[in-house]
Length: 139
Image (tube, rainbow, N blue to C red; front, side):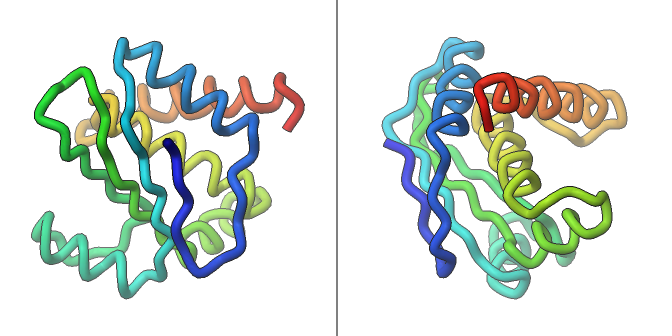
């Protein structure tokens, strides 16, 4: 189950749900649940500080609670404030940026990292690839 939790009245598009399924299967994983929690900057900063010991703003944080590496039981925490600012800065609409950040978080749940410049480049490539799948599916 994929569930969107937040103050906004957002609804996940069927195309995004299908792409999430493709991503999870590409990594030979399955999921029991993925909760997508929409928060503001302050709420996400509190999580970042408390659990990751980082005192900076970010657009998404992901946690997989499953002890089985092949199964995702996870939470994505996404800052809607960062979504709005990112969208404005790169000239895309907020829905497109939200999709990108959700895909980014799902990639983290599947094991991808973005600590090094090479990992960041790879992550961006994967985000673009999966966003492109949404476009080809009619989003």
